[in-house]
Length: 228
Image (cartoon, rainbow, N blue to C red; front, side):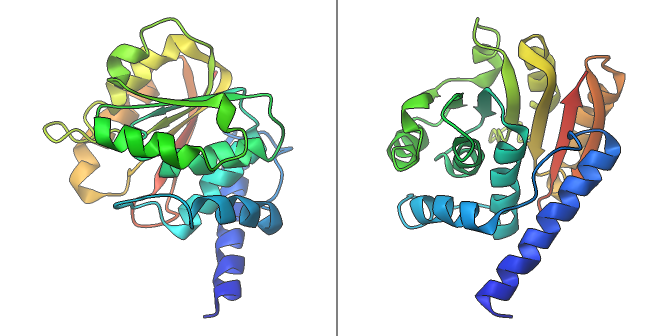
């Protein structure tokens, strides 16, 4: 398969994922279709310039995150577990392709990774609107701050792995705007199955959250939930 053909295939997968989300009531029906030209602008800023020691953010997941940032148009993006800013950057780049009327914040407990993220994110349009800091999201989300329109969860603690996902969603709930999207990375990883069972059980029992889609875009997958 040629590079162009692979790109076209990934774009079709992203559009199908958007349709699944629309049909489930997770994403507004007016959401834009994937625009390869807009994505390539972001790709040229990110992939040659970012330092990324390791990542599970696949090519199709990069396109999906970019498109969610673009289609949802969040006023404030918050990343819990921003690592070196790679996944966070695709969300931000998609949002920046709309206009500059947004802010974005990422937190991670890894000081070295956060320093790399700060350097990486300087390559993006709208970098003045973006901040990263060393913090525990479980504590940081309890502090006063702007309403969150898109929450991306990708924490991975050595001792707890993804066990904090349900707690993060609960703590974040008071700061989430109506219609906010919550993206949780890695629901398809077998090692995290029990963590995600608890996360999905909590979402099902919470009146603050509406439908959830689990999208098998790659071997890690992503779940997307909308607030009521």
